[in-house]
Image (tube, rainbow, N blue to C red; front, side, top):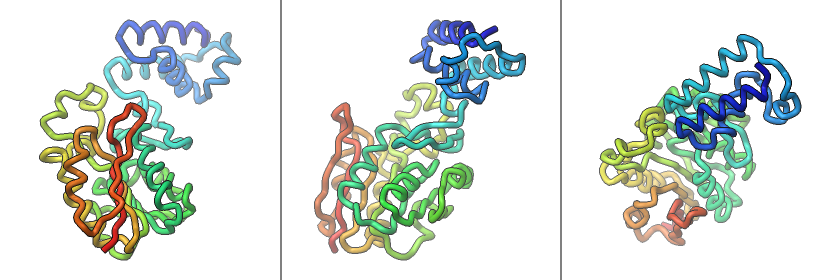
Length: 272
C-alpha cells in the first residue's frame, strides 16, 4: 500500500468514527509511523509502506479510534512555537495556556528568576526561561511528570518534586502556574479524550475548582520579591472567585481573555 492510499483510507476510517480533523490526524499518525514529516509525505505519495510501518500505522489509528489523544500517541505537542514531549503522565499543553506566557511577558519582561508551579511537561517553565533569558525552577508533585519535564528542559532550569512550593525558599521575580481547576463533579462530563486519558491529578481542582489557587496566592506572597508578578491560568467559570483571593498587598490585578473571549489568566503584582 502506498502513502496516498494509506492516508485516504485512514482519513475515511477516522471520519466515519466522528474523529475531528480526520485528514490531519491520519497524516500525523502516518508521519509518526514512518518517522517522517508531513512535507515528506506529500513529496512521496507513491512510496510503499513496509509491513512494519503498516502495522504501526494501523495500531495508531486503532488507538485514536478508542479515544486516546493524538498527542499521547505521537508523544509530541507544539506550544508557543516549540515542540514538547508529552505522555499520559502530564496534561497536554493547550493553546489557551499561551495566554499565560503572553501576560507574563507583558508585565515581567525583566524577570531573571521564575517559578512554574504544577509544571507538568515543563512547557511554561521552558518557554518563559527562553523568552526571558531567565533562570527557571519548575515544581510538580508527580515524579512521572517531572521525568517528562526533565526531557523537555534545557540548560539553566531546575526541577523540584514537591507539593506546590512547599520545598522551596528564596525569592522569585515571576511565578506562573496552570494548576488543576476543574471541579471534581464536572470531570465525568468532559470529553472522553480528557476524562479517560489525561491525569486526573492535573484536572481535579478540588471544591469549586479553587483548592490550588487558595494555596498558590499565599505561597506567592512568601516567595515573590516585592514588585514581582503572579500569573495563573483559570477556568472560564472561576474568574471572580480567583480574583477574590488577592488581598490588599496585591496591585494591578488584571484578567486576560482568550481568543474566544473567555477569562483565561489572572495576574497581579505583589506590593507588600
